[in-house]
Amino acid sequence: MKFFNYIILAELAATLVFLAAFALTLWPGPRRLVTAAVLYAAGLLVSVGASACRACIVVAIAYDSSDSGRPDTVALTGLVWPVLALGYTITAIALLSRSIPQQRALRVGKVLHLGIVAIAFFLTIARPHVPTAPTFALVYGLLWFRIREGYGP
Image (cartoon, rainbow, N blue to C red; front, side, top):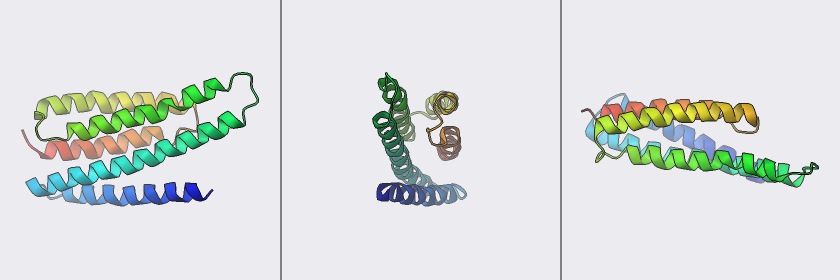
């Protein structure tokens, strides 16, 4: 149980980092936006890592305590969330790079965030142990767009 306390502390720290990143986007400037992007990346890595860790622990507990004939289905469906979260994290952070043209990054970002929200919603319905997946993608997506659109054309 002590491990879950560390996950909660990590999520709290990530929330504070996201608030700092959001505050930096209120007064856009080149340095502030780059700092906000770095804070967003750090917060996203910590938050998604904690969420994926929690999901893996829940899957492991469900797998060990399963008395059904096929506990592999629990592991297979439960590990989809951490893999999707990792893919989302890497893509979202890469798209914040200033070397990617603004139009292309925003177009891919819209597809990424709308797709993740839809997948996360269906995962939440399919497996209730997925931790707040729609909120995850919505909040992170809104801050991502705020930072990326601040770069200008």
